[in-house]
Length: 549
Image (tube, rainbow, N blue to C red; front, side, top):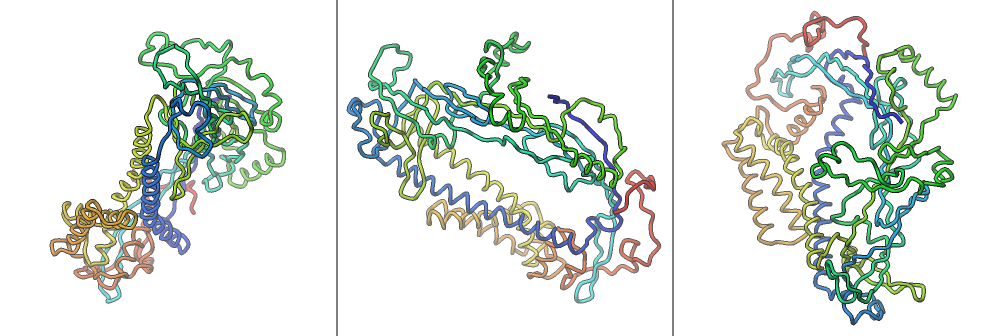
């Protein structure tokens, strides 16, 4: 299994005229994509705030519930569980195994197994260089304005083949046949929880560092409790070596404090029988080591190979041999994966006890479904009280909601400019303070409205709405720069279409107040003018070998 990346130099394409071609299909797709991009952050914010609200209400209900303890002697004889009970406990004894049946791998003492799959794929790297052209655009009232745009662009293509954690579609590459990416995915990434985890709880309570014996209560952990992983537990890579004892590296041997090794090592003889596993018999996966990797080489059929050669002949790359082709590297379509586990020594759990279906079996700890439909089931590393676990879960929910809120501030920058165009204002031409106020106004108005819808009115919500209203009022203030065109929906559409690179006939303004008429146009604006031979950014003429699109 080779790990060295491969670099190949692709071609270059010269496209005369405006950037993107400004064709009907290209312009429509650009406008549609930009519109979706502008609508996505508010939708994401509403979904995030709804999730945050539901999680907060579920955790509030949980912390107000009667929480029993597995360490309470009164629950030692199984009274807990006759009816579903909300229970908490800390276990220092975890008996579990986790298995990947596809590969026939079983790891003891772990609660969660993560199969991380990587694919050998080509990646296209594009680099574009354009000239600056100008043209005169005419408004509906006959006023004119000169605008600049990118034109006569040259796109350079390069290709890098390496291991990636996702597949890359090569159909849209400039040279797809020479850099074809097979889309095989025999062993996708997946997280596998333990199906037989049993936690032992000391009836007298967990006694840190004590070796005294005490009564024990065993509780089976339902796999649904591990759906969000074990909070605070590190993911440890798994490596199978001779004797389960690796040879330490130079840094681990001389600088163990600064370069600790958290890898979990297992005996390689525990992999006996994997050659008869479904993954091995179906896709020829074998264990190759090199960091605990399992590897499957891509084998192309005769028909697909002949078709690939034919397509390379059509695109002119059949005999395009480069130095990178001689370097040892993986083959596009190869698949490898490795395992990581969460195997904490001490965990605290909070969930609902359920009586077992089999007589004499241990009670089962499952998630509890709250009144709003949310499920609460927590597994954290270390010695944690119920209040600490619920507070930590609420903190995770809060910070996950902060990302869409921060994204909203970035989204408000272009949206404030669109709002200014609708009001006949040029936000980008105003002072930095006014631009900042406009962004704050847009973002806090939307954020405050989302909060008011979910939480109702409160001091925080009122403050956000007032701050947003003040910011929006600055957008309409006389100090804001006036746009050269009147406001309205047409002005908003024209700005959006201009961002998308749509041609002038798609975005005719009502008027250009103060616009200047330019006698004549350059070659980019007037097709009857003498054409200017395009030159490269460095001043050299483009060669005849450049492909014209």
